[in-house]
Length: 358
Image 1 (cartoon, rainbow, N blue to C red):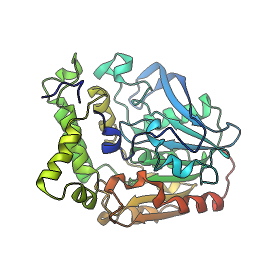
Image 2: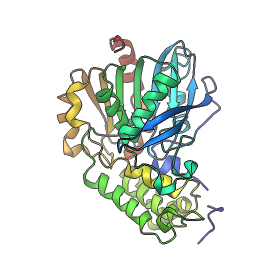
Image 3: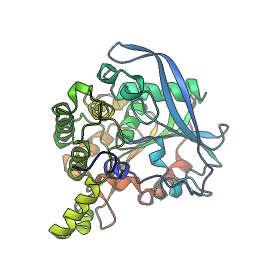
Image 4: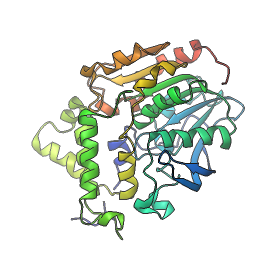
């Protein structure tokens, strides 16, 4: 087994639907900062005196604000990619950073925000859920950055699910909601089964030691690679990457050679935080204009369930965009590439009415 220090990182791309950041960009350099939320109360009733929330911003605070939310175990910087940010943030593009104030937070429990590993609490850290993460984002935006209203909230995968929470929990806060690579129904089926298997595999690893390890469990790379292959990448793309056994094994070998640079407790609580997600009963509260975007070959959100069609019937001003499967799509990772919906975003930003802050 290679040492943990020798293994290279690919997990931002493999697991969380976005490529590695490309900072030589066509938009202004991001500015990083942190803000401390005092007396943060979790849905469990637990209170932490201080929760640090890290973020990046692009553009002027005087412009209309756009909140962009990342996927599980990622961070705000993972959205600064050639296929996403450079398709959207440049001059004349839909989210031109000279016209919008772009906010990219690290969600509670991820990135440089407060998490089990940074707090020293390990598995005594509150078992947060998506409601807690969205509350933290809301406090950062309103209290920390002084933003009273958002032109748009857009997110991918976990970030997309959190967009559904935003438009139902804070219906007067935004004009537009764009949830991508997700569904608004309860965590269920293969999506939850594989998350549960991942979590239980970590918990049953002797090296995890109830979260009290001195070195990261060596099996984390293998577990996360298995999860990525099972739930992300698209059948056509994976076949093209590995059209025979030798080539497929070479793809796996490259992924297994990547280091686990995160923390097992952090990862565990991030994946378990989705367990009680279910904004479906609250869809009647939505006031924002909604553009929901999924890929037809998304492994985690199968189109054949019909869940999206049923959900969108309950959204007063909503549209569902299903990206057809093709040789260019990558299953659950497809929506990390803005070329598939750039035109629709541009039209939406031009046409969606501006609502008064609640």
